[in-house]
Image (cartoon, rainbow, N blue to C red; front, side):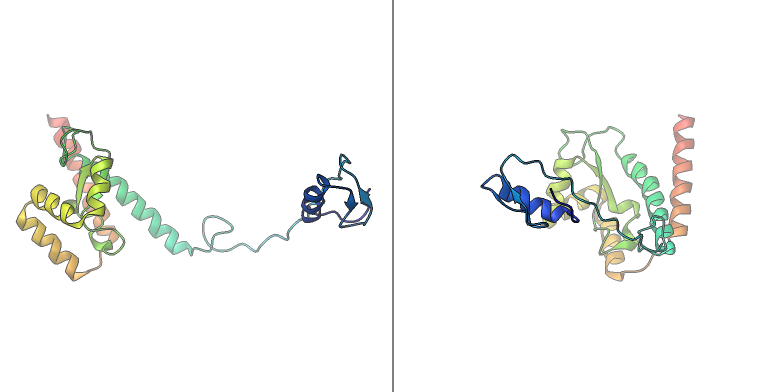
Amino acid sequence: MCGEDYDANTELQNRWRIARKPHLCFACRETIRPGDRLPKPVRRVKAPRPLRRGKHPRSRMPKALGVYRERVKYARTLWVPLIRAKEPSGICPSCRTRPWHDAAHGWPKGPYPAMQFELDNGIPLCRVCHRRVDSDFHAKRELWLRYVGLERYRRLELMAQARGKMDLDMTILFLESLTIDTKRAEEAQ
């Protein structure tokens, strides 16, 4: 039927019109009637893109940023169990009815990256309470005041206002030492 290059776009145009009435093919101008079999489209091969820096060949992320992100993920894997260890009962400290699943931040990670791995900045919450306090500033403030106390809350406020930078390597070392200490304390019991 169609001896010319028959690409996917031409096929779509023909299939759209084929159900309605006989018409001319968009590629070769032959008559196509309802029920005619259309040839398979020719797939055009794209030229391979040059390799860029990063883990994935198509990644535009510089290698150094990829290494940093891997270290942040590792620090997070250390931070979350320490936050969950604050409530050994497994019950959400906000509602006291459901088990907790999330480690919630008092000050968000994006605007306050230096406070991302601060232990006072995290509370284990159930998903319902986590969504509720993330959407309501006053509820979040009340919960944090009740959970960490006034002195530690004031310290967190000062850290947030300072907008300091954190040394990720020192933070990882600190979190690793706390993880080792908590494991030793669990083994001693």
